[in-house]
Length: 144
Image (cartoon, rainbow, N blue to C red; front, top):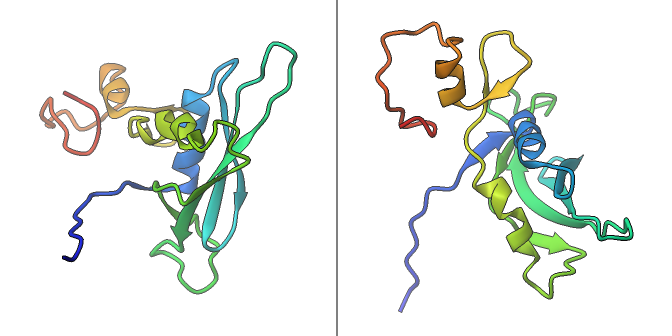
């Protein structure tokens, strides 16, 4: 019997991925985009122990050139949020779980020319969304 599969996988720009890493990072749990190549993006996670040893793990995500620039690859590539492998997995094969907060991170945007990354809900609450005719629900983000 053939396997059947149908899924919606999230795709983000590298700049959005960096903002997502910054949003979910804290004092202990740290996420950072560490390497971007033509076909892969590496995100490193570290959680220092009580002695300051970080023991970083790196998740490898596939990416492809954005539609804006398929020739020179100078535009930000599109990153598929589907972990291919985890390098230096020190959780006995369960290191992918460390990256689950990244996969669950809400959609973040920059409103206008702001350098501040926020969810759509935060943009609407702060009044930075100039489109007042929008409903209170959004199929693109976490606004309920």
